[in-house]
Image 1 (cartoon, helix red, strand yellow):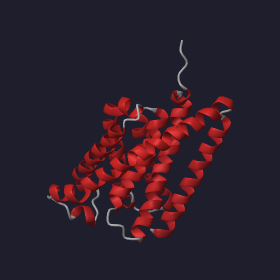
Image 2 (cartoon, helix red, strand yellow):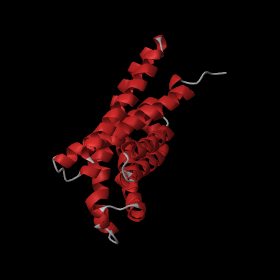
Image 3 (tube, helix red, strand yellow):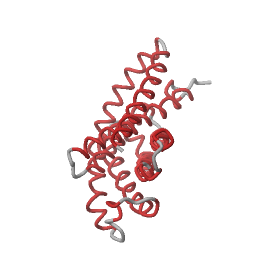
Image 4 (tube, helix red, strand yellow):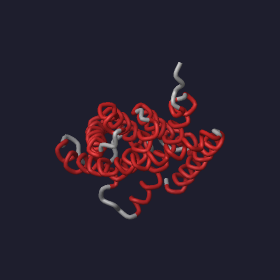
Length: 229
């Protein structure tokens, strides 16, 4: 019986979902705060590009399985919700943002199922297309669902006007994610090569470093929101 590739063993799948899900939540918190401070006009699009273009591209290059991208995104969204009892704040502080992350993961991951073989062949057009189309679909899903979940003032300004949302947000989400996905995938191939060399010798450094990443990133997220909310 042929042995499974090391990155598809259940231990690595679980670690991958936990670590990359934490990194997605971390990037949304840190870069979201920075972009808010500098009043960057395309915050939603750039955050989607960083979380699911760069980090998502790394996940796809390392594991070659879009369901891990979906799992990591959903875990990242749930991790944000875990801050509610920790910080003792209202669920409204995190609900819509977490919904957006989950929808982005599902939509982009679903599109990547179609193009994953071509992406593995390092076809840059497939990488751009998967990122752009997935982000575009997720933005429209977010408009449709988020409007009725816990919409903020900004989202409510697009009530009954999907065309305005499409022009203001959807194309921007698609642009950033499409552009950044090839860079994430390229970085992921380097991560894959490095991790493969390490795990041929010993596996414990990967487990220990994964645990440290999760604890440190979650702690920083909690402190950031505790100070800024």
